[in-house]
Image (cartoon, rainbow, N blue to C red; front, side, top):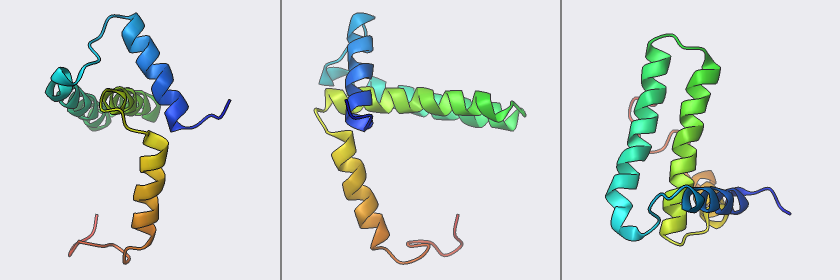
Length: 101
């Protein structure tokens, strides 16, 4: 079995369904907010000096929630990732910024 984002998304979806979390598109805003919350937790952990492992755990929590939301939207994360990365490879260096990030 391939170990790509689509496989991971299916794994996440199965777990979320098994644990009774909503997986219909009426919960879109809630899922988006939960992704934001996980990213905020990562930022807060970093700000408070937590080790990088803890920060990484919070980032992976966000990834899990992203994959769950993509499953709800019936999107293929591997295909989307490849398309976005191909588009980004075509962009100029430090595109769309004046100061860079």
